[in-house]
Image (cartoon, rainbow, N blue to C red; front, side, top):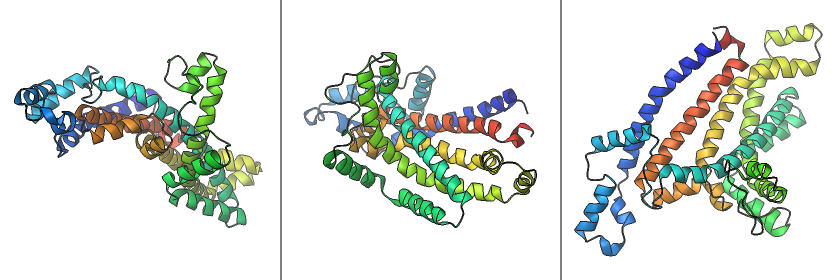
Amino acid sequence: MSFQRYLVRRLLLTLPLLLGITVVAFLIANAVPADPINANLPPNQLNNETIVRAFREKWGLDKPPVEQYFVYLGNLLRGDMGRSIKSGEPVLADIAKYLPATIELSTVGIVLGMSLGIFFGVVSAVWRNSPVDYVVRFLSLIGVSFPIFLLALLGLTILHAELRLLPGPGRLGFTASEPPTVTGLFVVDSLLASDFDTLRDALRRLILPGFVLALYLSGIIARITRSSLLEVLGQDYMRTARAKGLNERNVILRHGLSNALIPVVTVIGLMYGNLLVGSVLIERIFAWPGIGQYMFRASTSQDFPAIMGVSMLIAFIYVVVNFVVDLLYYFIDPRIRLA
């Protein structure tokens, strides 16, 4: 199968999925029992019928639910996700403001976690039932089962408050200034601006929250890598490769790991999607102004346009991540190319 044909098939499967997600997001946002009027109007204005009626008309709350959905869908197709009731800004502008911080933190976490997890998973599988294997399995079990918020608090207490090895919460220190916004990623923008002081500060503040995420992720990835690689190591083609006199390192990495990556890539893709939309605790603990903070504020204030916008963002992220994972399958697994 050609790559173009494979790409078109995946795109055609993605479009109806996105349409279905808009329905689900709309239903979830309107299923919230609280009244957005009570959540957003001052108490002294709730008894004023003129103000309440104007508020309903402004935000389309006076229309039937079906009409509200089609109005929302039409606006969404034009790139308009509505205007936040709380901030008064377009939801898309709010998301563009908060999302880069989450992308920066999640990318650091997934890269570190993937590197550690795959490395220790391979080591554990190659030296199966050895002391090294037992240590890796024990540490990965701790990483998976240890509450991530407790790990974050311990890291802040020990490495920041007690030992003063790493800076505390926030994307930048008080003495550093934000670089000119190009991508919203401080590391990239400071590089583009040749602002190496800001770059150094931004990287130092990424270390602690990034490693907290990485330690949790690496435990899961290590266990999946070990399990998948052990299954591959018992295949006939691995014995054939050794019988041909190939170097053991090439046998493990070229023939073994490459064929064991399918489940690992799947898990990494899903975990990256989880990080982008689910790192609320880490962002609050480290005062990280990401999309998790925006989600929390929108849900607590019953900001329906923001809730629906974030719901669509979450769905879009998962669809894109799974789409990219499907494309990676094409290059990793030759059986897909030959199907």
